[in-house]
Image 1: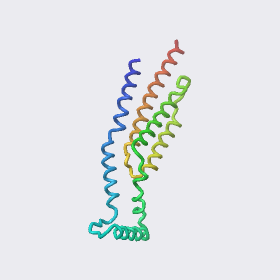
Image 2 (image 1 turned 180 degrees about the vertical axis):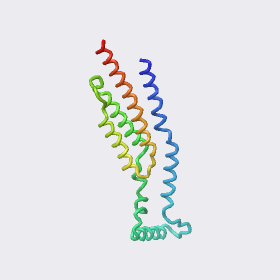
Image 3 (image 1 turned 45 degrees about the vertical axis):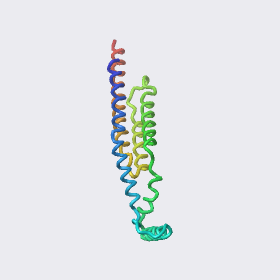
Image 4 (image 1 turned 45 degrees about the horizontal axis):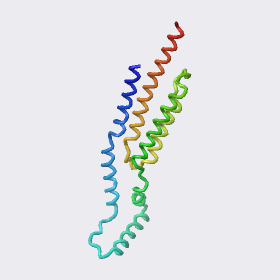
Length: 173
C-alpha cells in the first residue's frame, strides 16, 4: 500500500513539471514568430499618405503572388491558425484521461497486457499536434505525451505484475 501511494504521489509530481517546463521558451518563440510576421512586408517609412502606402503594399503582394511565393500569402494568415496553449493542455488532458481510463477499465479481469488502443491514442495525439501546430509554437506537447505515456504505462506494468503475483500466490496456497 505504501508503494502504491508513493508511486501515485510521484506521478502527480512529475507530470506537471515535465509538461510546463518549456512554456517560457514557447512564449519567446511565439514572440519571435510574431516579429518575423510583422517584418514580412517592406518598410515604408517615408510615405506621403496612407492611400499611397496601401497601393505600394498591394502591388508588392500581387507581384509576390504572381511569382509563386506561397510563404508570403500563408504568413499573412499565420496568426489566425495558431492554436492557444490552453487548447493543447486540453488535448493533453483528454489523452491522459483516455489512457488511464482504458488501462484501468476491467483491470481486475484482464489477464494480458493492453497496448493497441493506448498506442493508437499516443500516435493520434502526436499526429494531431503535427498537423495543427505547424509553426511549432507548442513544441512541449509531443515530449509531454511520450513522457506521460511512459510513466503511466510503467505504473500499469507495476500494478499488473503485482496483480498477477498475488493471483499466482493465492492459487498456489
